[in-house]
Image (cartoon, rainbow, N blue to C red; front, side):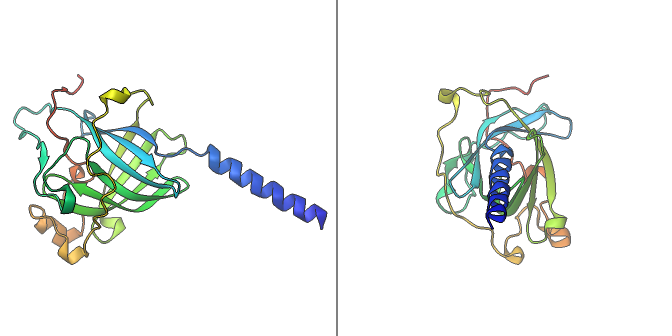
Amino acid sequence: MKFRSGLALAVLLFATTLAQAEPTVKGFWEARDADGNPTAWFLFNGNKEDVYSARLVKGFKPKNEDAPPPKEVCTECPGKKKGAKIMGLTLFWGMKRDGLHYDDGSVLDPRDGSVYHALMNLSEDGKELEVRGYLGIKMFGKSQTWYRLPDDAMKKDEIPKETLAGDTDKPKAASADKPKHKKKAADKTDQPADAEAVAPAPAATDEPAPK
């Protein structure tokens, strides 16, 4: 009996140590476009229940001179986020952690106020993050790979003030949550029309994309 109790305790301690050693998404992350140019930085934080959220903390001017200027204010956002400044706004929330997998979350596209379901998969070394947005069926979503930045990527006083963090807007039913400018694609595939819906376009900034 003592042997079994000792073995069970050892297994429990091992599992606890393993869980503590496993990386999380907490920290700074960089989203990039198809050419590898940085488009935005996000800062993830979690609570005691291992539920994570992320807000936009830095944006980069697109290299394409013909690209429309990014929005500064979330004019189409739902609820309390309507009219908020996009920089500093919580765009990902409710991401429940299960090891290296995060699910049951939501992502807001500030360009048109659309809210998608979201999930994430963290690499074992904690350096890359697959971010996926979708409307109803996970396999039909759109994914991006984000890249971890150093913990000191931004000084504390450089981080934009958090705007309306913790808002609990949830995705509507897929049939009623189709983005206005992406309706045709959503009807066919039940997914965001492009990867920018996963990593929403950043607000205007004076920071040029590194060459």
